[in-house]
Length: 138
Image (cartoon, rainbow, N blue to C red; front, side):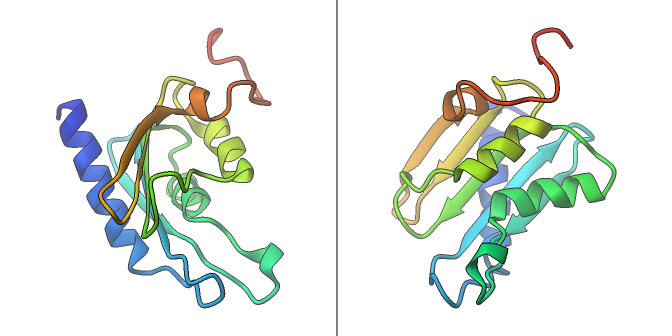
């Protein structure tokens, strides 16, 4: 699969994941998908709670879904929302993304409902991450 095919597949899977979003408070449904190092695509969506601090973002749900299924590394991530492509992952998601990414060069695709697309990397989103390991030495 080419990089472009992977990007398009992950974005499509993230839109599918968004359909399960539970976002009655923000009215901002988010979907995400990660390509696990095992070659499996894992989906996630945001799940809100009336006690807003208990809300979990789509990106973290996709990564946690991957880990729950026995894979601890992803090679690409896509996140989609109905807004603009400027709706990038929050700080908590960026930290979790850094924990489980293949490297800081792992691609991240952020797609908005207007068709906007931002292609970036984990390292660009979080240039000085707090990591459990140094990916350059692994």
